[in-house]
Length: 382
Image (cartoon, rainbow, N blue to C red):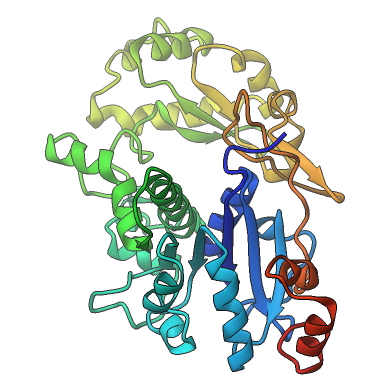
């Protein structure tokens, strides 16, 4: 069954991180995503694609030498056949290649031109290098990830690269493509990880504006300050998570932990007592193994879950029941999300090696076998 983006063609200029994540999301939901790889076999300066590269799944690949005039011409022809493109180079790189938005939108006025950068296309930082940790730092997010008495700790690269970057670009692409489908013109999307990260912090900004969020590290309900919203080590060195915010869920936590008559736990929102109550819960959770806590607290309204590794998550009964993870050519990876009732996309295909589909893609542009062979002989394609 085709996904909801079936019929759309997206050209992806190969890169790393958030750009490929955007391409994965679009491919997962039915778009034909054609990745332009380097004819030398590399990918945006990274290692060659391997079949286990989850971010590169579901693509077709053409390998072009964009250092040649012929390679640029082919890229332009391919983009002219597309509904959208995505690229993640520093500002100015695509323009120097002769593939900037002015050129490609002149070729194809309905084109949605998606640009993924850390700092954005403009601003004082725009020309310079950076990584997720820098983008979420400047956006005002990193300062709030960590425990009291510690230092800010990056949540891997989930927030800048993927939440504020690739996912935001995917949302922008679909929004702009919808505008074109309704009769609008093509346009450029300037997706900056700093901007996207700031948007992800919207609720926290709102709480700060209302006077219920402290900018001190680890001092709030949601940032490990509270005893009822945190992780705890178990007796076997594993961890569990508790999120008993609402009064009825907190009452259930107390009941199941045998604390319903302990007056110390009455003052749920007394911040002066949070540290002491957290110490008491920490000692309590170490009295049983994680499996024992699962047996007591799973399938209740405590707001509880074991803290699972990636390997454990793939085997957990809830995730198995929902098919949250799939196996593609022997590799376990997250299944496409979200789900649709009427337009379920097919199971993801593994990542193609660079140039795997060059001949078939060029054939869709009207080129015959002799023309394609000549381009390969000249080193324009691989």
